[in-house]
Length: 81
Image (cartoon, rainbow, N blue to C red; front, side):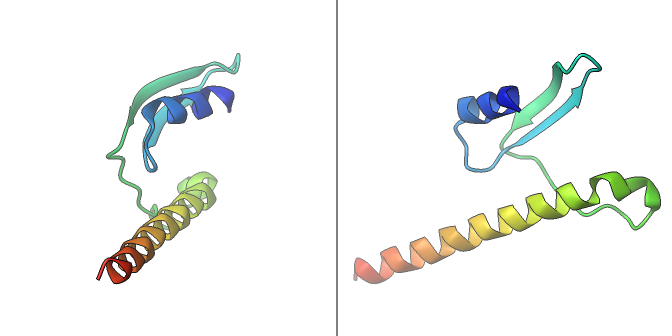
């Protein structure tokens, strides 16, 4: 987790994605890290059960982030008038 936190801090983005795998020794193999990751809920097939909760949590966090941004922009627009 420390390595992933460091990657996030290095990217310096409020929203980003990291496509990675964990090796048996605990090391991280990063395939990509960027600001354009796309998240979607997997199909109902049971083979995706292992990731469904994590994806839902990430989608909910992204939704809250966007709602916060809209609220802040609206408040800023009201105070600047």
